[in-house]
Image (cartoon, rainbow, N blue to C red; front, side, top):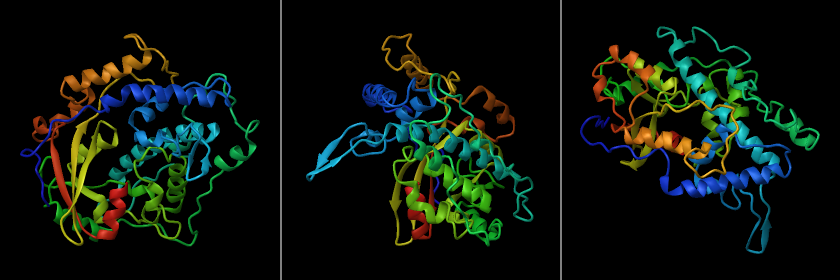
Length: 368
């Protein structure tokens, strides 16, 4: 493993593409107006604003998942995405993010001696709950306007082969990860690390979890720069469980650092991938603390205002302040610093590199 936690580093950029903020605000207004034509009382919510601010901007261009324009190409007319589908795609992103964090937290429930889970996730996983309040003026169901979509969208459709046995954590793959990372945390370079999965281990270790992942990820196609469905054979394969329980999907972390990651206090930003051989690539990522801003989950956001008191500008200013302060850790995180060695080294500018093998699997990981 090639790792550079303290030497070669780059100060973190702003979390947002600041030169695109005006464009993205216009996109938010266009989306709200477009959906309101078919969904009475629709208002952009905080979760939608997060998507609009962070999703690849090309997803809002003509012909893409969040397009509201009709366009012609080579004599063929392409119509914009249905307002109902755009609304559903927006609604599907928050459950996907929650699905990720819930299952990252399950990493700590694996028995180190058997490789099996100590506690199972409840049958009604939190990410499947309708945890976001219904929009004011919006019908609880869209069936009156679009019965086909209501009957197909909300019905579980992903089905894993019932004959498959639950997957048991692969210790040989963990050993490969430990050897690759020098048996040390890739951020703190401390001994006795925990082998953490990038795509959560419990996304596809059982038939139930595999079905949940398959259904949820199909409902949020607009969040990723690349098509996550292109990696279905690894992420949620109906014919094989544990497809991502591989060294290319693992990295070594201090156990406390993994807990912070699972709680959403920190994150790893992909910088670039470099081919360094026929069957190897070096992935460079940046460790970042995530901002502590006003809680707005489920709140309707005024996206039209441009003054300092508007919802939109307040949100942007909170992120600007976080950036000007050097992207510091959240206050709740500091209680972990008594456990973490050298917590002062955990700044948002640290960059680490890990090498991954198995080219076919590595390519799938890179798409994610």
